Amino acid sequence: MKSTIVIYGSSTGTCQAIAEKIASKLGTKAIDVSNATSDDLSAYENLIVGTSTWGAGELQDDWYDKIDLLKDSAGGKTVAVFGCGDSESYGDTFCSAMRALYDAAKAGGASTIGEVSVDGYTFDDSEAVVDGKFIGLPLDDINESDKTEARIDSWTAQLTPAL
Image 1 (cartoon, rainbow, N blue to C red):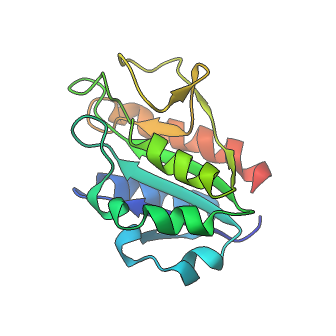
Image 2 (spheres, rainbow, N blue to C red):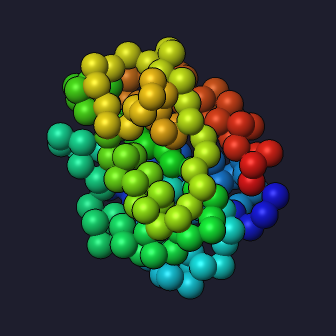
């Protein structure tokens, strides 16, 4: 596996805990985006980026100051996206914030990996669905915590050959 880092934005700790699980399974480290620098992103060939979704599909606050950092550092890298959301209370914007990270990575010239089927998810709409698949790993640790571990295991197994 090439050098890989997990970068997350978390307000309540849920996205942080998930980022740390993903990092552990991939044998790498996770850092809070609020502490990330261009040197951090430049030092790695693969970026796994994650955010929680707020309100009407908004990014986690710390990402607003760092989204350009992701875009500016994405060129030539492989990027996978994960997100946390609430499919019951916010089913119409479930994990939509993932789309902003995905779009920034693509605009910066990254290759993206890690699409996930919508099968098995209950939600009404999401900006993170493109061509019938999620652009990354959506997790609802509020209403479907019993599925989180298996979804992470499946996704990291899917990512590993490309990393």
